[in-house]
Image (cartoon, rainbow, N blue to C red; front, side, top):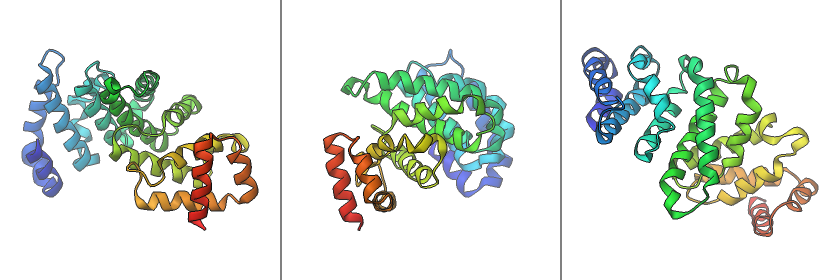
Length: 258
């Protein structure tokens, strides 16, 4: 699997010419539901490498695996569900994914909602990591294929926002929390809500992850800048709606950002 990724990233054209068809033969054979889960997971890892490194060039190979991949997003086994969700987050970066966006977004939102309802029990850690990857896939669909999911856009944004912050997967946390900050700065209407009605919820999330392992340094700096830019009067109004621990941390962030 590592060899496939290395070849795809460093020798993309040679991989397309000599290795893509053999790789698809392996994927087609191993991704079938009747195959043992270890081999199916291997197929999903190969798919992830191909999607990540070949991007648009891999689209002609999608018919070999896309239907089963989208089904595996909701697989009962976390060993298959997590790489499937990650693979969809990669495929969704390509314009050709638009035809799959509505059904994929629906399945992802169901996985996210059901998993988050299970809570933060230790026994749910692997499932929550899957949901973290599903959140990355969902927000990629929402930002890249807005027109394709326009009919359910409001509900899908709500699912994404309500499932934050990222709980387990730190890499996906960095992605999602950076995206959240950028959307707030851009005053995205589905994120900040009508008349800024979602800002207390959004600020709670950003305050929660500030200087944690699920944000990079740039995002933490951006959070502090955002807090300062809100201004004293608006900040006071938002702070009054937060839990005490978030209110105290918000004030500390404001002080650090000045």
